[in-house]
Length: 330
Length: 260
Image 1 (tube, helix red, strand yellow):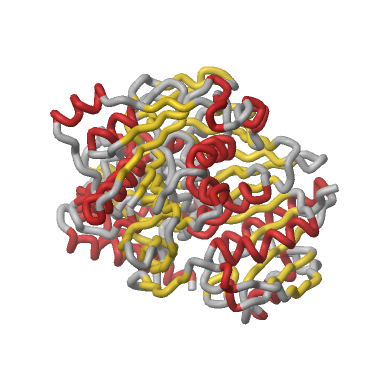
Image 2 (cartoon, rainbow over the protein chains, first blue to last red):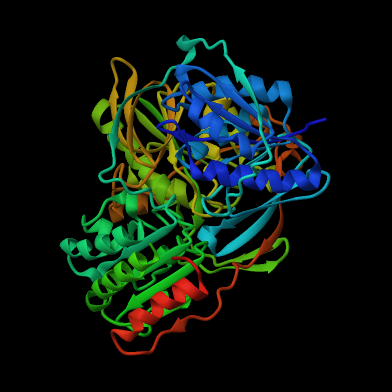
Protein backbone atom coordinates (compact mmCIF):
# COMPACT_ATOMS: atom_id res chain seq x y z
CA UNK A 1 0.00 0.00 0.00
CA UNK A 2 1.69 3.23 -1.09
CA UNK A 3 2.10 5.50 1.88
CA UNK A 4 3.75 8.83 2.43
CA UNK A 5 3.63 12.38 1.18
CA UNK A 6 7.12 13.17 -0.01
CA UNK A 7 8.74 16.41 -1.02
CA UNK A 8 11.96 16.66 -2.99
CA UNK A 9 13.82 19.34 -1.07
CA UNK A 10 15.93 21.83 -3.01
CA UNK A 11 18.86 23.54 -1.42
CA UNK A 12 21.37 26.17 -2.34
CA UNK A 13 24.61 26.96 -0.55
CA UNK A 14 23.60 24.49 2.16
CA UNK A 15 20.24 26.15 2.87
CA UNK A 16 16.78 24.80 2.13
CA UNK A 17 14.83 26.73 -0.50
CA UNK A 18 11.59 28.43 0.44
CA UNK A 19 9.51 26.46 -2.06
CA UNK A 20 10.48 23.19 -0.33
CA UNK A 21 9.29 24.49 3.06
CA UNK A 22 6.04 25.62 1.42
CA UNK A 23 5.48 22.13 0.01
CA UNK A 24 6.36 20.37 3.28
CA UNK A 25 3.91 22.67 5.09
CA UNK A 26 1.23 21.68 2.58
CA UNK A 27 2.23 18.03 3.07
CA UNK A 28 1.63 18.31 6.82
CA UNK A 29 -1.83 19.78 6.21
CA UNK A 30 -2.62 16.91 3.83
CA UNK A 31 -1.32 14.34 6.29
CA UNK A 32 -3.84 15.53 8.88
CA UNK A 33 -6.54 14.36 6.48
CA UNK A 34 -4.96 11.14 5.26
CA UNK A 35 -2.88 10.07 8.25
CA UNK A 36 0.16 9.60 6.02
CA UNK A 37 3.75 10.32 6.90
CA UNK A 38 5.46 13.40 5.53
CA UNK A 39 8.87 12.69 4.06
CA UNK A 40 11.53 15.17 3.00
CA UNK A 41 14.07 13.87 0.50
CA UNK A 42 17.30 15.71 -0.05
CA UNK A 43 20.39 14.83 -1.98
CA UNK A 44 23.93 16.09 -1.53
CA UNK A 45 26.81 16.18 0.90
CA UNK A 46 27.52 18.76 3.60
CA UNK A 47 23.83 19.29 4.27
CA UNK A 48 23.86 18.94 8.09
CA UNK A 49 22.46 22.43 8.59
CA UNK A 50 19.77 21.98 5.93
CA UNK A 51 18.75 18.60 7.34
CA UNK A 52 18.49 19.96 10.88
CA UNK A 53 16.44 22.93 9.74
CA UNK A 54 13.89 20.52 8.25
CA UNK A 55 13.01 18.62 11.42
CA UNK A 56 9.95 20.78 12.30
CA UNK A 57 8.53 20.21 8.81
CA UNK A 58 8.42 16.44 8.36
CA UNK A 59 8.12 13.01 9.97
CA UNK A 60 11.05 11.52 8.13
CA UNK A 61 14.02 13.08 6.40
CA UNK A 62 15.75 10.93 3.81
CA UNK A 63 19.19 12.37 3.30
CA UNK A 64 20.96 10.76 0.36
CA UNK A 65 24.50 11.77 1.11
CA UNK A 66 26.95 11.92 -1.80
CA UNK A 67 29.05 14.64 -3.38
CA UNK A 68 27.80 13.66 -6.84
CA UNK A 69 24.48 15.45 -6.26
CA UNK A 70 25.96 18.94 -6.13
CA UNK A 71 25.52 20.58 -8.56
CA UNK A 72 22.25 19.00 -9.68
CA UNK A 73 22.12 16.76 -12.73
CA UNK A 74 19.09 14.70 -13.70
CA UNK A 75 21.18 11.54 -14.06
CA UNK A 76 22.61 11.66 -10.56
CA UNK A 77 19.27 12.58 -9.00
CA UNK A 78 17.50 9.79 -10.84
CA UNK A 79 20.11 7.28 -9.66
CA UNK A 80 19.69 8.55 -6.09
CA UNK A 81 15.90 8.84 -5.88
CA UNK A 82 14.60 5.88 -7.86
CA UNK A 83 15.77 3.12 -5.47
CA UNK A 84 14.38 5.05 -2.49
CA UNK A 85 10.99 5.52 -4.13
CA UNK A 86 10.85 1.86 -5.14
CA UNK A 87 11.68 0.77 -1.60
CA UNK A 88 9.24 3.01 0.27
CA UNK A 89 6.54 3.55 -2.35
CA UNK A 90 5.33 7.00 -1.39
CA UNK A 91 1.83 7.89 -2.46
CA UNK A 92 2.78 11.44 -3.42
CA UNK A 93 6.01 13.10 -4.56
CA UNK A 94 6.07 16.89 -4.84
CA UNK A 95 8.68 19.35 -6.02
CA UNK A 96 9.04 22.99 -6.94
CA UNK A 97 8.24 24.19 -10.46
CA UNK A 98 11.86 25.30 -10.65
CA UNK A 99 14.69 24.74 -13.10
CA UNK A 100 15.45 21.52 -11.21
CA UNK A 101 11.83 20.37 -10.91
CA UNK A 102 11.06 21.01 -14.54
CA UNK A 103 14.21 19.20 -15.67
CA UNK A 104 13.87 16.20 -13.35
CA UNK A 105 10.21 15.41 -12.71
CA UNK A 106 9.07 14.58 -16.27
CA UNK A 107 11.98 12.19 -16.67
CA UNK A 108 11.56 10.67 -13.22
CA UNK A 109 7.82 10.15 -13.80
CA UNK A 110 8.49 8.44 -17.14
CA UNK A 111 11.09 6.26 -15.46
CA UNK A 112 8.71 5.27 -12.66
CA UNK A 113 5.86 4.83 -15.17
CA UNK A 114 3.69 7.08 -13.10
CA UNK A 115 1.76 10.33 -13.53
CA UNK A 116 3.06 13.87 -13.16
CA UNK A 117 1.28 17.22 -13.27
CA UNK A 118 3.61 20.18 -13.86
CA UNK A 119 3.56 23.81 -12.73
CA UNK A 120 0.55 23.60 -10.39
CA UNK A 121 -1.09 26.55 -8.67
CA UNK A 122 -3.10 24.44 -6.26
CA UNK A 123 -3.33 20.93 -4.80
CA UNK A 124 -6.05 19.20 -2.85
CA UNK A 125 -6.31 15.77 -1.32
CA UNK A 126 -9.09 13.36 -0.44
CA UNK A 127 -9.10 11.19 2.66
CA UNK A 128 -8.18 8.16 0.56
CA UNK A 129 -5.01 9.97 -0.50
CA UNK A 130 -6.11 10.83 -4.03
CA UNK A 131 -4.46 14.02 -5.19
CA UNK A 132 -6.07 16.61 -7.44
CA UNK A 133 -3.86 19.27 -8.99
CA UNK A 134 -4.92 22.64 -10.29
CA UNK A 135 -2.91 24.15 -13.10
CA UNK A 136 -3.18 26.87 -15.74
CA UNK A 137 -3.37 25.95 -19.42
CA UNK A 138 -2.84 28.18 -22.45
CA UNK A 139 -0.78 30.52 -20.30
CA UNK A 140 -3.64 30.94 -17.81
CA UNK A 141 -6.55 31.58 -20.16
CA UNK A 142 -8.16 28.53 -18.59
CA UNK A 143 -7.40 26.25 -15.65
CA UNK A 144 -7.76 22.50 -15.26
CA UNK A 145 -8.25 20.15 -12.35
CA UNK A 146 -6.08 17.16 -13.07
CA UNK A 147 -6.29 13.77 -11.40
CA UNK A 148 -4.19 10.62 -11.50
CA UNK A 149 -4.96 7.06 -12.57
CA UNK A 150 -4.19 4.27 -10.07
CA UNK A 151 -0.42 4.78 -10.51
CA UNK A 152 1.74 5.90 -7.59
CA UNK A 153 3.48 8.08 -6.63
CA UNK A 154 1.29 10.94 -7.75
CA UNK A 155 3.85 13.52 -8.82
CA UNK A 156 3.46 17.28 -9.17
CA UNK A 157 5.57 20.41 -9.32
CA UNK A 158 4.15 23.54 -7.72
CA UNK A 159 4.88 27.24 -8.19
CA UNK A 160 6.32 29.47 -5.51
CA UNK A 161 3.94 31.17 -3.05
CA UNK A 162 1.04 28.74 -3.55
CA UNK A 163 1.26 27.47 0.04
CA UNK A 164 2.21 29.25 3.25
CA UNK A 165 5.13 28.07 5.32
CA UNK A 166 4.06 26.74 8.70
CA UNK A 167 6.57 25.38 11.14
CA UNK A 168 5.51 22.59 13.51
CA UNK A 169 7.87 22.91 16.48
CA UNK A 170 6.26 19.85 18.10
CA UNK A 171 7.47 17.70 15.24
CA UNK A 172 10.94 16.32 15.19
CA UNK A 173 11.58 14.31 12.11
CA UNK A 174 13.60 11.14 12.16
CA UNK A 175 16.72 11.57 10.04
CA UNK A 176 17.55 8.65 7.80
CA UNK A 177 20.98 8.98 6.31
CA UNK A 178 21.59 7.01 3.15
CA UNK A 179 24.91 6.39 1.45
CA UNK A 180 24.03 5.46 -2.09
CA UNK A 181 26.15 3.18 -4.22
CA UNK A 182 26.65 5.50 -7.14
CA UNK A 183 28.49 4.50 -10.28
CA UNK A 184 29.90 7.82 -11.41
CA UNK A 185 30.87 6.39 -14.80
CA UNK A 186 27.15 6.23 -15.64
CA UNK A 187 26.83 9.96 -15.19
CA UNK A 188 27.37 11.34 -18.66
CA UNK A 189 26.57 15.01 -18.17
CA UNK A 190 28.97 17.21 -16.29
CA UNK A 191 28.47 20.71 -15.01
CA UNK A 192 31.67 22.54 -15.91
CA UNK A 193 30.83 26.13 -15.13
CA UNK A 194 28.45 28.48 -13.47
CA UNK A 195 27.89 32.13 -14.17
CA UNK A 196 26.15 33.71 -11.23
CA UNK A 197 23.55 36.34 -12.06
CA UNK A 198 24.58 39.88 -11.15
CA UNK A 199 23.45 41.24 -7.82
CA UNK A 200 21.94 39.41 -4.90
CA UNK A 201 18.30 39.51 -5.87
CA UNK A 202 16.15 36.38 -6.01
CA UNK A 203 14.91 35.12 -9.34
CA UNK A 204 11.58 36.73 -10.28
CA UNK A 205 9.87 33.33 -9.90
CA UNK A 206 11.08 33.08 -6.28
CA UNK A 207 10.62 36.63 -5.03
CA UNK A 208 7.71 37.63 -2.77
CA UNK A 209 7.60 41.05 -4.40
CA UNK A 210 8.33 41.83 -8.03
CA UNK A 211 8.41 45.37 -9.45
CA UNK A 212 8.58 45.79 -13.20
CA UNK A 213 8.66 48.35 -15.95
CA UNK A 214 7.95 48.07 -19.64
CA UNK A 215 8.47 50.25 -22.67
CA UNK A 216 6.96 53.17 -20.77
CA UNK A 217 10.28 53.60 -19.02
CA UNK A 218 11.63 55.00 -22.30
CA UNK A 219 15.32 54.18 -21.85
CA UNK A 220 17.32 51.37 -20.22
CA UNK A 221 19.11 53.71 -17.80
CA UNK A 222 15.79 54.72 -16.25
CA UNK A 223 15.48 51.22 -14.77
CA UNK A 224 17.57 52.67 -11.95
CA UNK A 225 14.29 54.13 -10.62
CA UNK A 226 12.73 50.66 -10.52
CA UNK A 227 15.83 49.13 -8.96
CA UNK A 228 15.81 51.75 -6.20
CA UNK A 229 12.19 50.92 -5.44
CA UNK A 230 13.04 47.21 -5.51
CA UNK A 231 15.83 47.75 -2.99
CA UNK A 232 13.47 49.38 -0.51
CA UNK A 233 10.96 46.54 -0.84
CA UNK A 234 13.55 43.76 -1.04
CA UNK A 235 11.91 42.96 -4.37
CA UNK A 236 13.19 41.59 -7.65
CA UNK A 237 12.95 43.52 -10.91
CA UNK A 238 10.93 42.13 -13.82
CA UNK A 239 10.17 43.41 -17.27
CA UNK A 240 8.27 42.83 -20.52
CA UNK A 241 9.13 41.19 -23.80
CA UNK A 242 9.50 44.58 -25.49
CA UNK A 243 12.39 45.77 -23.34
CA UNK A 244 14.15 42.39 -23.59
CA UNK A 245 13.83 42.43 -27.38
CA UNK A 246 15.27 45.97 -27.33
CA UNK A 247 18.24 44.62 -25.41
CA UNK A 248 17.50 46.82 -22.40
CA UNK A 249 17.09 43.99 -19.91
CA UNK A 250 18.13 40.37 -19.53
CA UNK A 251 15.87 37.58 -20.73
CA UNK A 252 15.89 35.99 -17.29
CA UNK A 253 13.78 38.89 -16.00
CA UNK A 254 11.11 38.68 -18.70
CA UNK A 255 7.58 38.05 -17.40
CA UNK A 256 4.97 36.49 -19.68
CA UNK A 257 4.28 33.92 -22.31
CA UNK A 258 7.78 33.59 -23.77
CA UNK A 259 9.38 34.46 -20.43
CA UNK A 260 8.47 33.41 -16.91
CA UNK A 261 5.25 32.97 -14.99
CA UNK A 262 5.50 34.64 -11.64
CA UNK A 263 3.33 34.15 -8.57
CA UNK A 264 4.52 36.95 -6.32
CA UNK A 265 2.54 38.16 -3.31
CA UNK A 266 2.83 41.68 -4.71
CA UNK A 267 3.45 42.62 -8.31
CA UNK A 268 3.82 46.27 -9.35
CA UNK A 269 3.77 47.19 -13.05
CA UNK A 270 4.98 50.60 -14.19
CA UNK A 271 4.55 51.80 -17.75
CA UNK A 272 3.33 48.38 -18.84
CA UNK A 273 0.35 48.44 -21.21
CA UNK A 274 -0.76 44.90 -20.41
CA UNK A 275 -0.38 42.98 -23.67
CA UNK A 276 -1.78 39.47 -23.40
CA UNK A 277 1.77 38.03 -23.58
CA UNK A 278 2.63 39.85 -20.40
CA UNK A 279 -0.51 39.48 -18.30
CA UNK A 280 -0.56 35.71 -18.87
CA UNK A 281 2.60 35.62 -16.79
CA UNK A 282 1.12 37.40 -13.75
CA UNK A 283 -2.22 35.57 -13.47
CA UNK A 284 -1.37 33.92 -10.16
CA UNK A 285 0.13 36.94 -8.39
CA UNK A 286 -1.84 37.76 -5.24
CA UNK A 287 -1.95 41.56 -5.41
CA UNK A 288 -1.27 43.54 -8.58
CA UNK A 289 -0.60 47.29 -8.77
CA UNK A 290 -0.55 49.10 -12.11
CA UNK A 291 0.69 52.60 -12.87
CA UNK A 292 0.35 53.90 -16.41
CA UNK A 293 -0.38 57.21 -18.10
CA UNK A 294 -3.03 55.66 -20.35
CA UNK A 295 -6.32 55.26 -18.43
CA UNK A 296 -7.41 52.66 -21.01
CA UNK A 297 -4.28 50.52 -20.66
CA UNK A 298 -5.28 46.84 -20.52
CA UNK A 299 -3.07 46.27 -17.47
CA UNK A 300 -5.75 47.94 -15.31
CA UNK A 301 -8.10 45.02 -16.11
CA UNK A 302 -5.66 42.72 -14.32
CA UNK A 303 -4.77 44.97 -11.40
CA UNK A 304 -6.17 45.28 -7.87
CA UNK A 305 -4.98 48.86 -7.46
CA UNK A 306 -4.30 51.37 -10.19
CA UNK A 307 -2.95 54.86 -10.55
CA UNK A 308 -3.32 56.72 -13.83
CA UNK A 309 -0.11 58.67 -13.75
CA UNK A 310 3.45 59.17 -14.82
CA UNK A 311 5.87 56.58 -13.52
CA UNK A 312 8.69 59.15 -13.53
CA UNK A 313 6.73 61.07 -10.89
CA UNK A 314 5.16 58.14 -9.02
CA UNK A 315 8.10 55.74 -8.67
CA UNK A 316 10.61 58.09 -6.94
CA UNK A 317 7.86 59.36 -4.62
CA UNK A 318 6.84 55.80 -3.82
CA UNK A 319 10.45 54.87 -3.06
CA UNK A 320 10.93 57.84 -0.72
CA UNK A 321 7.61 57.37 1.03
CA UNK A 322 8.19 53.64 1.51
CA UNK A 323 11.63 54.34 2.97
CA UNK A 324 9.98 56.53 5.61
CA UNK A 325 7.10 54.16 6.34
CA UNK A 326 9.22 51.02 6.51
CA UNK A 327 11.89 52.73 8.63
CA UNK A 328 9.17 53.69 11.12
CA UNK A 329 8.30 49.97 11.43
CA UNK A 330 11.75 49.08 12.61
CA UNK B 1 24.76 15.18 -38.41
CA UNK B 2 21.34 13.55 -38.10
CA UNK B 3 18.91 15.80 -36.28
CA UNK B 4 15.28 15.37 -35.30
CA UNK B 5 13.10 18.22 -34.10
CA UNK B 6 9.85 17.49 -32.26
CA UNK B 7 7.32 20.16 -33.17
CA UNK B 8 3.74 20.93 -32.27
CA UNK B 9 1.05 23.21 -33.67
CA UNK B 10 -0.66 25.20 -30.95
CA UNK B 11 -3.27 27.96 -30.79
CA UNK B 12 -1.78 31.41 -31.36
CA UNK B 13 -1.13 33.26 -28.06
CA UNK B 14 -3.77 35.79 -29.14
CA UNK B 15 -6.36 33.07 -29.86
CA UNK B 16 -9.47 33.03 -27.69
CA UNK B 17 -9.63 29.99 -25.42
CA UNK B 18 -12.70 29.53 -23.23
CA UNK B 19 -14.29 26.87 -21.11
CA UNK B 20 -17.24 25.38 -22.98
CA UNK B 21 -18.14 22.74 -20.41
CA UNK B 22 -16.42 20.77 -17.64
CA UNK B 23 -14.82 18.55 -20.24
CA UNK B 24 -14.52 20.77 -23.27
CA UNK B 25 -12.76 23.95 -24.34
CA UNK B 26 -13.67 26.32 -27.10
CA UNK B 27 -10.49 27.19 -28.98
CA UNK B 28 -10.34 29.75 -31.74
CA UNK B 29 -9.14 28.20 -34.99
CA UNK B 30 -5.92 30.16 -35.21
CA UNK B 31 -2.94 27.84 -35.09
CA UNK B 32 0.76 28.43 -35.43
CA UNK B 33 3.97 26.61 -34.68
CA UNK B 34 4.86 26.56 -31.03
CA UNK B 35 7.30 29.44 -30.52
CA UNK B 36 9.88 27.36 -28.63
CA UNK B 37 9.71 24.62 -31.30
CA UNK B 38 10.66 27.17 -33.97
CA UNK B 39 13.75 27.93 -31.90
CA UNK B 40 14.40 24.17 -31.84
CA UNK B 41 14.10 23.98 -35.65
CA UNK B 42 16.53 26.88 -35.91
CA UNK B 43 18.99 25.06 -33.64
CA UNK B 44 18.83 22.03 -35.94
CA UNK B 45 19.28 24.08 -39.09
CA UNK B 46 22.28 25.96 -37.67
CA UNK B 47 24.05 22.64 -36.97
CA UNK B 48 23.18 21.27 -40.39
CA UNK B 49 24.65 24.38 -42.00
CA UNK B 50 27.84 23.91 -40.04
CA UNK B 51 28.32 20.14 -40.20
CA UNK B 52 26.06 18.97 -43.01
CA UNK B 53 23.50 16.23 -42.53
CA UNK B 54 19.75 16.24 -42.30
CA UNK B 55 17.02 17.83 -40.21
CA UNK B 56 13.72 15.97 -39.85
CA UNK B 57 10.70 17.59 -38.22
CA UNK B 58 8.37 15.21 -36.41
CA UNK B 59 4.92 15.84 -35.00
CA UNK B 60 2.24 13.76 -33.36
CA UNK B 61 -1.10 15.18 -34.37
CA UNK B 62 -4.11 13.54 -35.93
CA UNK B 63 -5.45 16.68 -37.57
CA UNK B 64 -2.86 19.35 -38.21
CA UNK B 65 0.57 19.58 -39.76
CA UNK B 66 1.11 23.37 -39.68
CA UNK B 67 4.33 23.02 -37.68
CA UNK B 68 5.74 20.49 -40.15
CA UNK B 69 5.13 22.85 -43.05
CA UNK B 70 6.70 25.67 -41.08
CA UNK B 71 9.73 23.49 -40.40
CA UNK B 72 10.08 22.60 -44.10
CA UNK B 73 9.73 26.24 -45.12
CA UNK B 74 12.50 27.16 -42.68
CA UNK B 75 14.75 24.55 -44.26
CA UNK B 76 14.09 21.13 -42.72
CA UNK B 77 14.66 18.24 -45.13
CA UNK B 78 11.93 15.85 -44.13
CA UNK B 79 8.64 15.92 -42.29
CA UNK B 80 6.96 13.06 -40.46
CA UNK B 81 3.45 13.02 -39.00
CA UNK B 82 2.48 10.33 -36.54
CA UNK B 83 -1.25 10.05 -36.94
CA UNK B 84 -3.78 7.58 -35.65
CA UNK B 85 -7.29 8.03 -34.26
CA UNK B 86 -6.29 5.90 -31.26
CA UNK B 87 -3.88 8.63 -30.13
CA UNK B 88 -6.78 10.92 -29.25
CA UNK B 89 -6.75 11.74 -25.52
CA UNK B 90 -3.13 10.66 -24.96
CA UNK B 91 -1.36 12.32 -22.05
CA UNK B 92 2.19 13.66 -22.57
CA UNK B 93 3.68 10.33 -21.42
CA UNK B 94 1.72 8.37 -24.04
CA UNK B 95 2.81 10.97 -26.61
CA UNK B 96 6.43 10.51 -25.52
CA UNK B 97 6.20 6.70 -25.77
CA UNK B 98 4.81 6.99 -29.29
CA UNK B 99 7.42 9.49 -30.48
CA UNK B 100 10.13 7.31 -28.95
CA UNK B 101 8.80 4.23 -30.73
CA UNK B 102 9.39 6.09 -33.99
CA UNK B 103 12.82 7.39 -33.02
CA UNK B 104 14.30 4.36 -31.30
CA UNK B 105 15.72 2.62 -34.34
CA UNK B 106 16.75 5.74 -36.21
CA UNK B 107 20.32 6.93 -36.25
CA UNK B 108 20.49 10.40 -34.71
CA UNK B 109 22.99 12.71 -33.05
CA UNK B 110 20.62 15.23 -31.58
CA UNK B 111 16.94 15.71 -30.85
CA UNK B 112 15.63 19.21 -30.22
CA UNK B 113 12.26 20.41 -29.03
CA UNK B 114 10.80 23.50 -27.38
CA UNK B 115 11.02 23.96 -23.61
CA UNK B 116 7.24 23.61 -23.51
CA UNK B 117 4.25 23.86 -25.85
CA UNK B 118 2.16 27.00 -25.51
CA UNK B 119 -1.09 25.05 -25.14
CA UNK B 120 -0.74 22.71 -22.18
CA UNK B 121 2.49 24.45 -21.06
CA UNK B 122 3.60 21.10 -19.62
CA UNK B 123 7.16 20.59 -20.85
CA UNK B 124 6.94 16.82 -20.27
CA UNK B 125 7.37 15.28 -23.71
CA UNK B 126 11.02 16.28 -24.29
CA UNK B 127 12.58 14.86 -21.09
CA UNK B 128 10.20 11.86 -21.24
CA UNK B 129 11.32 10.98 -24.78
CA UNK B 130 14.96 11.17 -23.64
CA UNK B 131 14.14 8.75 -20.81
CA UNK B 132 12.43 6.30 -23.20
CA UNK B 133 15.42 6.42 -25.55
CA UNK B 134 17.95 6.19 -22.72
CA UNK B 135 19.84 9.33 -23.76
CA UNK B 136 20.74 12.38 -21.65
CA UNK B 137 18.59 15.51 -21.83
CA UNK B 138 18.99 19.10 -20.73
CA UNK B 139 15.94 21.30 -20.24
CA UNK B 140 15.64 24.95 -21.25
CA UNK B 141 18.96 25.59 -22.96
CA UNK B 142 20.05 29.08 -23.99
CA UNK B 143 23.46 28.29 -25.43
CA UNK B 144 24.88 25.46 -27.52
CA UNK B 145 28.20 24.55 -29.14
CA UNK B 146 28.63 21.15 -30.70
CA UNK B 147 31.94 19.39 -31.15
CA UNK B 148 31.13 16.93 -33.93
CA UNK B 149 34.43 15.07 -33.65
CA UNK B 150 34.31 14.50 -29.94
CA UNK B 151 30.57 13.88 -30.23
CA UNK B 152 29.73 16.18 -27.39
CA UNK B 153 27.90 19.43 -26.75
CA UNK B 154 28.67 22.35 -24.51
CA UNK B 155 25.33 23.65 -23.30
CA UNK B 156 24.23 26.68 -21.30
CA UNK B 157 21.16 26.15 -19.16
CA UNK B 158 19.11 28.76 -17.38
CA UNK B 159 18.77 28.26 -13.62
CA UNK B 160 17.29 30.50 -10.91
CA UNK B 161 20.41 32.31 -9.82
CA UNK B 162 22.43 32.28 -13.01
CA UNK B 163 23.56 30.23 -15.95
CA UNK B 164 24.99 26.75 -15.78
CA UNK B 165 27.42 25.34 -18.34
CA UNK B 166 27.33 21.60 -18.99
CA UNK B 167 29.21 19.17 -21.17
CA UNK B 168 26.98 16.45 -22.54
CA UNK B 169 27.88 13.53 -24.80
CA UNK B 170 25.82 12.93 -27.94
CA UNK B 171 23.31 11.63 -28.79
CA UNK B 172 21.22 13.80 -26.50
CA UNK B 173 17.93 15.69 -26.35
CA UNK B 174 17.78 19.40 -25.58
CA UNK B 175 14.69 21.53 -24.98
CA UNK B 176 15.14 25.05 -26.29
CA UNK B 177 14.43 28.33 -24.54
CA UNK B 178 14.16 31.84 -25.93
CA UNK B 179 17.62 33.34 -26.22
CA UNK B 180 19.18 30.27 -27.87
CA UNK B 181 18.43 31.54 -31.38
CA UNK B 182 16.01 33.82 -33.19
CA UNK B 183 14.10 31.57 -35.57
CA UNK B 184 14.53 32.58 -39.21
CA UNK B 185 11.58 33.91 -41.19
CA UNK B 186 11.13 31.66 -44.22
CA UNK B 187 11.13 33.11 -47.73
CA UNK B 188 7.71 33.31 -49.37
CA UNK B 189 8.95 30.99 -52.09
CA UNK B 190 9.86 28.37 -49.51
CA UNK B 191 6.50 28.76 -47.79
CA UNK B 192 4.83 27.98 -51.14
CA UNK B 193 7.07 24.97 -51.64
CA UNK B 194 6.38 23.72 -48.13
CA UNK B 195 2.65 23.74 -48.86
CA UNK B 196 3.28 21.07 -51.45
CA UNK B 197 6.02 19.19 -49.64
CA UNK B 198 5.41 15.55 -49.05
CA UNK B 199 4.72 14.55 -45.46
CA UNK B 200 5.44 11.02 -44.41
CA UNK B 201 2.54 9.58 -42.43
CA UNK B 202 3.12 6.96 -39.78
CA UNK B 203 0.43 5.04 -37.91
CA UNK B 204 0.55 3.10 -34.65
CA UNK B 205 0.65 -0.34 -36.24
CA UNK B 206 3.81 0.52 -38.16
CA UNK B 207 5.40 1.58 -34.85
CA UNK B 208 4.55 -1.75 -33.29
CA UNK B 209 2.23 -0.11 -30.77
CA UNK B 210 -1.28 -1.31 -30.01
CA UNK B 211 -4.14 1.17 -29.52
CA UNK B 212 -4.37 0.12 -25.86
CA UNK B 213 -0.86 1.48 -25.19
CA UNK B 214 -1.90 5.03 -26.07
CA UNK B 215 -4.93 7.30 -25.79
CA UNK B 216 -6.93 8.13 -22.70
CA UNK B 217 -7.00 4.59 -21.27
CA UNK B 218 -3.20 4.39 -21.17
CA UNK B 219 -2.78 7.82 -19.63
CA UNK B 220 -1.64 8.34 -16.06
CA UNK B 221 -3.00 11.85 -15.68
CA UNK B 222 -6.44 13.03 -16.68
CA UNK B 223 -8.10 16.41 -16.85
CA UNK B 224 -11.19 16.11 -14.67
CA UNK B 225 -12.56 19.56 -15.10
CA UNK B 226 -11.83 22.78 -16.96
CA UNK B 227 -12.30 26.02 -15.06
CA UNK B 228 -12.22 29.67 -16.05
CA UNK B 229 -9.33 31.60 -14.51
CA UNK B 230 -10.03 32.91 -11.00
CA UNK B 231 -11.68 36.32 -11.29
CA UNK B 232 -9.98 39.34 -9.81
CA UNK B 233 -12.18 41.89 -8.11
CA UNK B 234 -12.51 45.07 -10.21
CA UNK B 235 -9.51 47.39 -10.04
CA UNK B 236 -9.54 50.19 -7.48
CA UNK B 237 -8.30 53.28 -9.26
CA UNK B 238 -6.77 55.74 -6.81
CA UNK B 239 -8.06 59.05 -8.07
CA UNK B 240 -6.39 61.48 -5.70
CA UNK B 241 -3.79 63.91 -6.98
CA UNK B 242 -0.07 63.39 -6.62
CA UNK B 243 1.45 62.91 -4.06
CA UNK B 244 -1.61 61.85 -2.00
CA UNK B 245 -2.22 58.96 -4.40
CA UNK B 246 1.18 57.49 -3.52
CA UNK B 247 0.42 57.66 0.21
CA UNK B 248 -2.97 56.08 -0.32
CA UNK B 249 -1.47 53.26 -2.37
CA UNK B 250 0.99 52.44 0.39
CA UNK B 251 -1.79 52.54 2.96
CA UNK B 252 -3.93 50.14 0.90
CA UNK B 253 -1.04 47.74 0.35
CA UNK B 254 -0.30 47.70 4.06
CA UNK B 255 -3.75 47.74 5.59
CA UNK B 256 -6.04 46.18 2.99
CA UNK B 257 -3.89 43.84 0.90
CA UNK B 258 -1.39 43.35 3.78
CA UNK B 259 1.46 42.60 1.41
CA UNK B 260 4.11 45.05 2.63
